[in-house]
Image 1: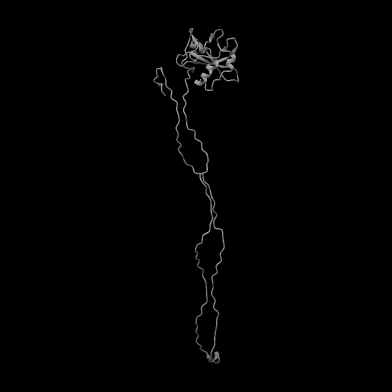
Image 2 (image 1 turned 180 degrees about the horizontal axis):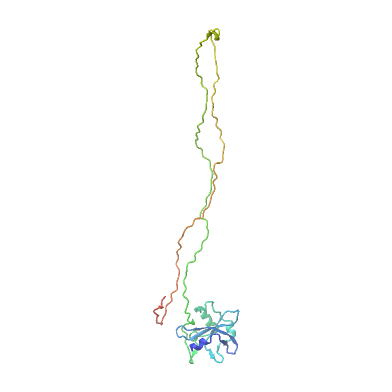
Amino acid sequence: MTGMLEELIGSAVYDPEGDKIGKVKRIYVDNTSGAPTWVSVTTGMFSGDSLVPLAGAQLRHDPEALQVRVEKEEVKTAPHLEHDGLISPEAERELFDHYHIDPNRAGMELGGKQQMRGGRRPDDRGMVRSEERLAVNKQNEEVGHARLHKYVVTEEQSVTVPTTHEEVRIEREPITDRGQMGRADIGEQDAEVTLHEERVTVQKEAVPVERVRLAVDEVEDEQTISDTVRKERIETEGVENDRRNPGRR
């Protein structure tokens, strides 16, 4: 039967009235019993794949085809298959409600006996195990302000300036030729000279001596971010574990 089902990939699917629904793209089988439960059907070039139940379906020959027990219109309005090709438990419950199928009798009849449903899988793809990972982003935020403020202070400043001043000293010169001096008069006499000296005057002026401004530098740093994440674990029940692939992950 497995070989016959594999040969149906690409075959036409018909409803009970003989209307063509589409072509078989993938077959889903029960994880426990191996009974086929669903087929994904391509219904058009621009539409997604639809899931069609195999409960009550029959194989045709010459040419190979599959006749199902649901109407074409039911398939058109059924929930579409997700892009990853897997059927989640929530999606399968919606499909059961849509097609009015007993979840416990969803398998295709093999050898005249309808198989009880225990699980579902697409071919041998199994199920997807997911885990959370940290996605870190960065954003700029204000952490403070810097400003310049100018104010005035006073300080004592001393400058040494060289100056000159005049001083009087006595010079004496003996007279050797009295005839040239003429007659000497004895009496009072004054002689006067004007003395000079340099005095220092101070003026103040404001002159620019330095330009000060704020400059912002970008400095590389590291921060460690920690948070808790969830991981899915998969375990099997009622299945012998392969030594290379333990049941619990």
